[in-house]
Length: 295
Image (cartoon, rainbow, N blue to C red; front, side):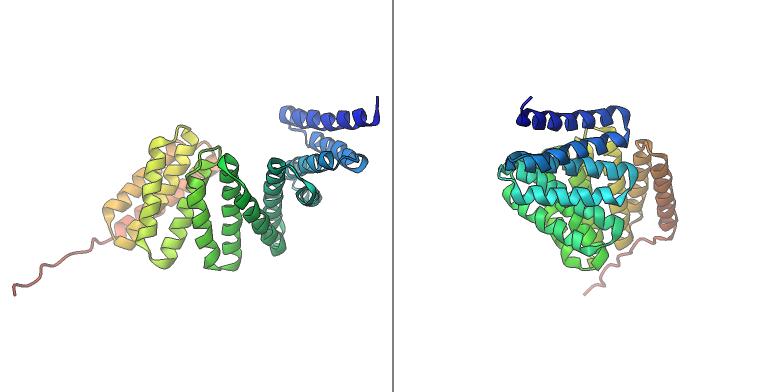
C-alpha cells in the first residue's frame, strides 16, 4: 500500500467511525474518527486533503462535546475548523468549514461565557453568508441569527437583535432543513423587540408569520413549536392592547401546541405559561371607547 493509499484509508476509517457512532451512540467512535483525521492532517502533503479532514474533525469533536460536555473537545473542534477555513480553496468546502467554526464558536460561548468566541462566530458567519447562496445561505443565516441573539442577550445591545431580525427575515424565505427553525427564531426575536419598543407592528408581523407557518408546516412537532411561539406572541399583543379575545386565542393556541409536544419537560413549561395567561386574562379590562359629544 502506498503512502497516499494509507492516508486515504485512514480518512475513510474516520468516516466509518462516524457511522459507528450513529449506530452505537458511543462517543469513543467520535474520538477515534478525530484521531484518524488528525493523523491524516499531520501526514499528508496535500493541502486540500488536510483542510477537508480538519473540517471533519470539527464536526466529530463538536458532536463529542454534545455527548460528553468535555470542553477540550470543543477547543479541538474550533482550532481544527480555524485551520480548515484559513486553508480551504474549494468554495463549497470553505462554506461548510466556516459554518462549523461559527457553530463551534457560539457553542463555546454558551459553555464558557467568553465573548471573543461569539465575536469570531459573528465575523465568520457574516463572511460565509455573503458568499453563500441557496440552501447553504439559509443554513448559515440561521446560525448567524443565533449568534447575534446570543450577543444581544449577553450585552443588552439592541442593535444585535435588530440585525438578528434582518438576518432572520432573509433565512425564513429560504427553503431548506432549517427554514422552520429560522421562522420560529424570527418570531421570538420580533416578540422581544416588539415588546421592548412597545411596537405592535413587529408583534403583528410575528403573528402573521406564525399563522402562515402553522398552515403550511407538515411535521407535527414543528407545528407544535410554531403554535407555541404564536401563542406567546398573541399573549404579548393582548398585554399591549388589553384585548381579552386575543388572550383567549393565545390560550387556545397554546393548548393546541401542548397536544403536539413530545418532550415532557417542555410540556410542563408550556402548561405553566398557559396558566399565567389564564391569570392575566382575568385581569384584562377591555378598553372602552366613548362617543364624542354632539358638536
